Length: 186
Image (tube, rainbow, N blue to C red; front, side):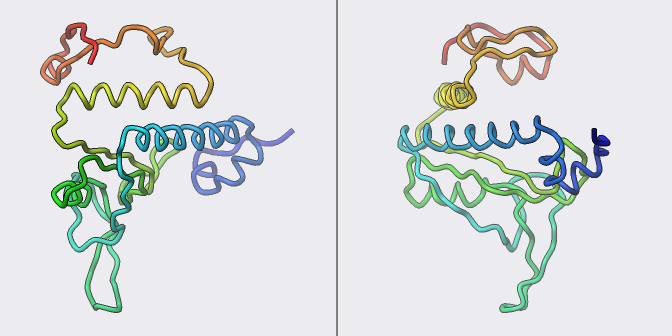
């Protein structure tokens, strides 16, 4: 028998969490399968995977507090990126019709078992797309991720969610106003 790790220990010593909790090991395997499925789905849809700079002169693309560092070779202050957005959009302007990145982000803010100072983010952009094309692509990504872990049915606090069921369209206005939205298959 072992003593449960505190939340702080789970955050600071992820390897220990992997040793003592089978759920942590299972989550690591599922995360790997999901990341691979998302990447493969985007490649199949003609998206170009791009790696953008982690060190940036000006942090942008989100409202978050950055980590600051100094690049000695050029004697300039820099920050670790807080979003993927800006350089991906530059790639789009440069001629990439569809681009994505699955990259590490760094935000100098609170930390607990569900929030890390560094985490992985996905951003994808498509020329001539709109809210409907991105919604449809997002649905395909979610289904690919679900298939990668072996189920399209999940138990949630609000009840069972079957991803094969109808996906309701909820506009930003309705979401902000707490409204219902209309049914639509993007």
